[in-house]
Length: 75
Image (cartoon, rainbow, N blue to C red; front, side):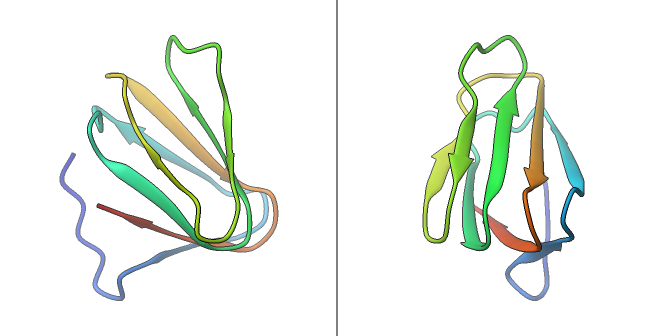
């Protein structure tokens, strides 16, 4: 995955979904709000609240959806 964010975080509006492809090995962190994360071919979904992070461990599609206005960052 190659992603450049100038401000250091990406803002998501309530209900907005971010699609990440081939981002295995990347880490997503919730900076504000709460987001739901699901990865292709995984039975486990993850909910991230302020300060929580998740390392994407599968290839394919990863979806990130904001429960309310949220901010996420990637490493």
